[in-house]
Structures are given as structure tokens and as C-alpha cells.
Amino acid sequence: MKILFATSEVHPLIKTGGLADVSGSLPIALKTLGHDIRILLPAYSSVLEKITHKKIICRIKLAGYPEEINILEYTLPNTTLIVYLVDAPTYFNRPGKPYTTPDGYDWIDNADRFTLFSKIAATIALNQTQIEWQPDIVHANDWQTGLIPALLATEESRPGTLFTIHNLAYQGLYSYDTFKHLNLPQHLWSMHSMEFHGQLSFIKGGLTLADKITTVSPTYAREIKTSEYGYGLQKLLRQRSVDLTGIINGVDYSIWNPEDDPHIKHNYSHDNLENKVLNKRAIQQHFNLPETDVPMLSFIGRLVDQKGVNLILHALPKLLESPVQIVLLGSGDLYYEEELNKIKQQAPDKLALLIGYDEELAHLIQAGSDMLLMPSKYEPCGLNQLYSLKYGTIPIVRRTGGLVDTVIDTSPRSIKHNTATGFIFDESDHRSLTAIILKANHYYTDKKDVWNQLIINAMKQDYSWEISAIEYVDLYEQALIF
Ligand code: ADP
Ligand code: GLC
View (cartoon, helix red, strand yellow):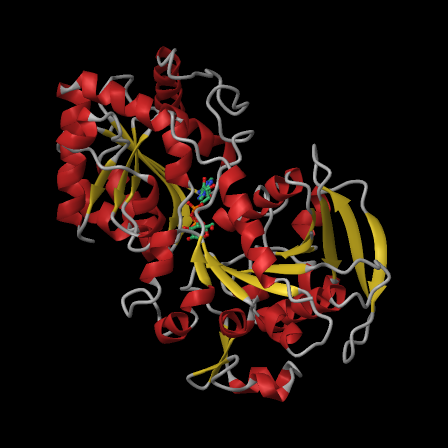
């Protein structure tokens, strides 16, 4: 099968979160299964800076745009995976991040930027370029690509379309004026298409008009059909139930494996866990924490409401009264950054905080910590808990989304059957989080045999892409329409 995989992030070229990890690994798994998959990505300036050996494969002239747009071809390092880069300097060649300015505000022209990207995707999908390659399937991801299935829906000889929701909270909502200014077909302004309560909703393009819809875990697929998690789109998602599937994300174990991770000095497996402790020492040295054996709990991620940072913030004062070390790596809302900083000043020997983005440190923290905190309010899949399982770092998670599908709570029964891999709490409040952490600490300190078994159970989990990639292929086959 020929697949065009349209995405706004791909690891290792550009990453703000898990979408990049998925875009950098699922296509490789599909390629291994024998499919001709090619990625389409905007040529952000930071991407252009990173790459060598690119070539212009074609130029595309879109109606209504003054300049031709170059499509660059690049092969991802150590793979045969082709990435087509949409080189439209006015839209993508600028400092800052993919969606935000250097000071953290949304780019004012995001609607224009991802409309251009989607129009290019549709042009390639319809084989109207000199690439002379027509995909059988276009796989679009998140709101930035929601327009693609909508643009294709009315075309004859079009590929089948699949739209993956990585996060329903980000929808790409814009005014009617913006819709007019984008010069999109008028029929898209309809409640059966992309109009949503008087606004243009990019994500609705995918939700209403893609042939198939997926999200990144079976539990999140159920949750988004309820008012609690559906952001007003639950009714539409219920109507599309037969076309909506939850497929759990996989992990690229060539990047996330403690046995040969190049970012950590002391590689280990469940046979030599002494080395895991050496990584804990490395974290303590890095952050100037005392080199003791108290439980080390960590958080890595975006400092936003979704991730339950509020719960961590309010749980910290009580937790810091007990013998623990807490390590936090993340960036996001200024409020959280400042509040966490204040608490850090009060407990510098127990709390380590790095505001920022540091890939190498993320690997070391996964390796050296005893537990990973993911008290998310909602979590479509979550990749950090999957990485932590592999590193024998016990995840403490809230019972939501992909966290439920990947972590098995510690109970007398799961201990007896050697299936326990983590700790799950229910209520999204800081008291429940504190209580579950104290329970986990109790196992860590007083029930070492159970704790060691948890580590072994966790490290044996296999979330490689093979199984999930086959599920995508099944859906592609169902979406094939010609
Ligand atoms: P989300 O996509 O919602 O942010 P995921 O758990 O799916 O959450 O994926 C987050 C990814 O981003 C992981 O690979 C994680 O290690 C990485 N990450 C998040 N914040 C940071 C950070 N501050 N430094 C390094 N890596 C980070
Ligand atoms: C989103 C979700 C996260 C998921 C990731 C990759 O960013 O928040 O739960 O793991 O996409 O699918």
C-alpha cells in the first residue's frame, strides 16, 4: 500500500510532544511491513538547519498563492523513510516553535500555515504534482491536518483517508472571517462539515469527513464519546462510532531501551539493576541532591492542566515532609513554572526542577528514578509511562485514557499473579495523588521483594509497534475506496 503520512512533528527533526515520537516510529514499523509510506512535514527553519542531503523533488503552484512552493525530499537518518518537506518560507521559516512564537504565543497566522500545508497534502494525494506518486491512503494527524480529509472528500479518484486524534482538546478554532480569508470551499462552512458553534474547526474536518478515525488508546476512544472528555464533539463521535477505533501507541525500542540507551552512562537490564541505581546517583549529582536511597519520584512533560500539574503542586508540601526526592523536568504554563520554582526554593535538598526541554536528561531521569508521576486529567495515550515501564521505573498514574490500558495496578491479586506494573488512583485531586504516592513509597521502603517483582514485571512489558501497526494496516484496507 502507498501511504502519505501528514504530520506537523516528526522525531528527531521537530518535537513538542508525543505526536513527534509516533510520527517518527509508526511509519518505520509500516515500512518494515512492506508498505510504501512517505511522511509530509512543514519545513520549519529548525528542521532545515538540522538536515543535509535534501533535494527539491518538485514545485507546486497553488491557486491563489503568488509563489511556487518547493517540496524537498529527505531521508530520515538510519532509515529508508522518505520525508517530503513543504518549503514555504513565508509560513514556516521563522524562529520559535512549530505553533508558537519565541515568547510562547500562538502564531497569529496558524490557520493560514496549516491550510497551506493541507492544500499541498491534498495536491500530492491527488497526484497533481511531478512526484507522480498517488497514495492509496492519506493518514492525517491532529487538527493541523484536519482540513486534508475535508479537501479530499469531494474529489473523485481520491485516496482513502484516516484521521488520528492525538489530543481532542486542541481543535484549531478560528472565526468566520478567518474562514472567508482562507478561501476554502464554501460548502465546508456547515455543521456537517467544519463549522462548530459559529467557528471554523480544523479538527472537525477530520472527524466528519475522514473515512476512518482513530485515537491513540481504546479507553480514550470510549471517553471522547462522553461529555466529560468530548469538548462538545461527543455526539459527532458517537455518530461515527463504527468508524472510530482506539489503537494504542507503540514505542521505538531502538531509542528507548535501558540496555543500549546512549544517553545514559550505566546501561542495564532486569538482570543487573545495580546499574539502575548508578543512574539514580547520576541524577542526584546532576541536581546536587544528597546521594541517598530514599525513593525518587519524577515527572517529565508539558506543564499544563492536562498533565495534572496542579495535583503535583498541591501534593508537594505534604510529600516533601516524608523521605523522598522529587525531580521535575518540563516547561509550559508560566504559572506552573513560577509556583514550582517557589516550592523548590523551600526544599532544595529534596526537590529538583528543570524548566526547559532536555531530551538527554529525560532519558537519564527515566533510567535513574524509582517512580514516574503521570497524574493526568486526561491522557489520550501517554508515552512516558510506556518508556518508564521499559526502564523499570514504576508509573503512578490516574485512571484515565491510555494510562488505564497500559498500567496494571498493584493489588493483592496482581501481586500474586506477577502482573502488577504500577499504581493507579481514581480521583483527580491532590489528596488521592498523595495517598497513592505514600502507598507506593511504603512498598518501595518496606516490601522490597514486591517492589523488585514490580520492576521485573514492568520491564517485561512489550509495547513495540508491530501489533499496533498491523491494526492500522487493517483500517487502511477498510478505508481504501478505489
Ligand atoms: P504529550 O504528547 O501529551 O506531551 P506523551 O507522554 O505522549 O505526552 O509524550 C511526551 C513526549 O515528550 C515524551 O517523549 C517525553 O519524554 C517528551 N517530553 C515532554 N516534555 C519534555 C521535556 N521537558 N524534556 C524532554 N522531553 C520531554
Ligand atoms: C498527544 C497526547 C498523548 C499521546 C500523544 C501521541 O500529545 O496528549 O497522550 O501519547 O499525543 O499520540
